[in-house]
Amino acid sequence: MTAKQERLWEETPIDETSQKRGRKRPDGESTTNVVLSSYIGDNAPVFREILKLFVPAGSTVADVTCGKGAFWKQVEEGSYKVLATDIQTGVDCRDLPYEDGSIDALVLDPPYMEGLFRTTTDEMAGSGSHSAFRDHYSDGKATEQLDGTPKYHDAVVDLYLRAGQEAKRVLRNYGIFIVKCQDEVSANTQRLTHVELVNAWAEDFYCKDLFVITRPNRPGIVRLLRQEHARKNHSYFLVFVKRNPRYPKRIRPTKGELTELGLG
Image (cartoon, rainbow, N blue to C red; front, side):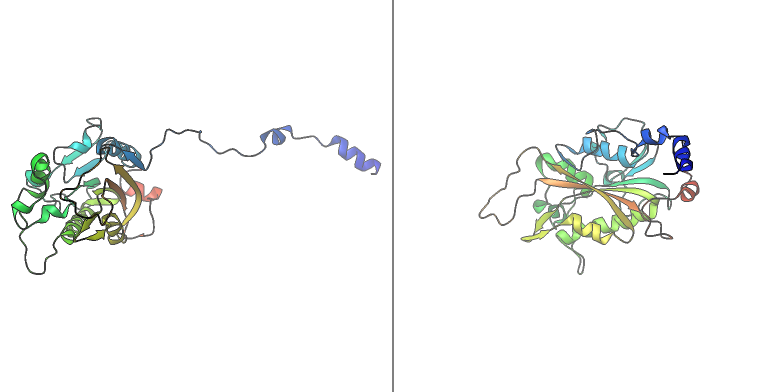
């Protein structure tokens, strides 16, 4: 090393700040206090967490199959502008009285049992302790079977899809679509309702999340001869985001779109 090089070496200051900074640490904290994807129990606490995660307070939420409001039991009153309707209030989820793009979030929980789509009331599901479910979701009436119309499980899916078309109309772009459903065995055939819905709506809605709710008690089977399929003891909340048709691949709005929607 020459004398000049020694002088430069000795005079070059050490940047202690850069040495102490070290590896960049991302923001945030370590915690287990997060919303999970699977729960044992009732719908109400899960629904509350879904709203907290995806729907800002003050949003206009249309619950188009509200029934007795079971989902809302643990949501603080006044947190949202709730438009609660169902068949008993005279509003069909397939024909809503709202303007195009006027709703921030929509909740859909129609009859997901094919037993509510029978041609006579004697054969319908939802009797006894489940009579309120039959009244609020199917109007307590048998389904008229017309030539060419879907029946059994296909009638269930048809109702969902028609309600989904109306949800697409009334929701604003990037609005939240919360759907309750359950898989079922129909005519001894496994029907995965949640998969059918996700696939059917993929063009118009991005499936952002899925929640599994398992009932805490064991379900029974009446008149069991031989079991062919596992007995369903879980259901789903599916959370969708309405796509912007101008930018169908986007799953969240840009700052410009937020301003345009009045949310910026």
